[in-house]
Image (cartoon, rainbow over all chains, first blue to last red; front, side, top):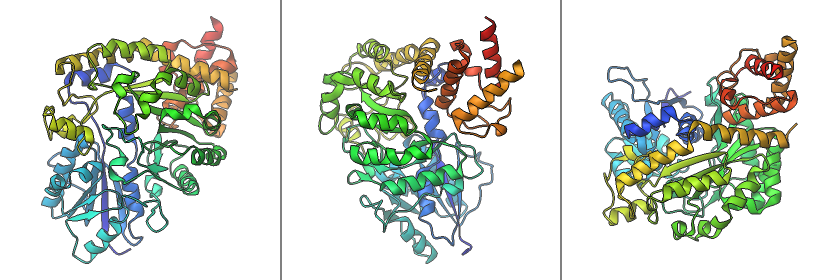
Length: 439
Length: 80
């Protein structure tokens, strides 16, 4: 070991800001469930950064939910890398400032920082944009040579090519308790929805990892954390159905249980659905966004969702009948939405039989076409107040209703959809499907 | 009888979660100590209903997080 000690700090706690919403989170089962799951996942980005770090450097991986108190002593490193989401970026900047005040150089990276490098630069000695691949090894070498630059740009394509690929350091998770562990099989998504702030914003196109690499990572993740529930940290796993089937066939003998995010087109491929169930997939998260054509027009590049929304109910039934639950995601506050959206969406959800539901408010994350459009239209309520990027707090002026209509309608919908009876009914539906399919 | 039910529950959970039955203690929390995801927890309960021929009260599902509690619930259902 060279004596160099690098700390990699993940700050990924997300809290709703509106007090009434925060109160609902305590009283309603399933509300912000997905947020809690996300917040409890290890940071695959930083585990990948660790994988890109030379072997002779000591890497310490830490997860920080809350900014440590002012008088708390910070763990000392020679260099610290911090990654966070938009909603907690302010805390990440404060932590960075404190480290810098102690004389510890700070590197900031991640999705938010990639979109707003100039903002991040004010709190960092170096900012890494896009993927760490292609940037981090150079940064470490420069740091050792005493010439670390303020800005590094990682790769936006070819991140899974032999020359650039780094296996995430799942071994750093040993000894910690995780219910879920993430593995990535792809980066980006060809749908390119206007609001999406996921990995497609740091890639130049959809990128897929070779199946054997995914399987290797799954094996290592499973070895590091005893029998974890796996979550594929993809934007859309089954873009390529042939590759998807290859992956599913390779996953089946491993006996893992897993979750992923994909699009509704999987319901059109019955062979894929059967393989999905056999491989141990327990849930797919699908962004339906809105079940009506008018709300979906122009939302994604090819009107993919608008063309399929008439078959949403049939698609949900087809997937769930195989024992794979669907976490259906809907967005309220789209430009076509009036206050009628709330009872209409509740009606659709009731009819859908969805086993899990995620309702979020349209959120203008920086770097998205949605943010740019709303800014052009002077419809942002508090531009730059990233604390509001929780997916539950309203930070824009809706087109066909007031801000108050949207906030109150959202609360009403949460109370209806996430009520105890509804939650229990969903649990019961899932159990009955399991009983039908398994012995 | 109760002991038999506890053992049968242990066997079921071991099979459903691919764990060694000898590592499962009656009062281990399936979520906190065994790291079962909530979906997997529900699946275990569904399989328990099927194997033991009972139907749990939906409102008590969230409390059934140990082998003992599952076995007790099965016993209660059989009595009613």
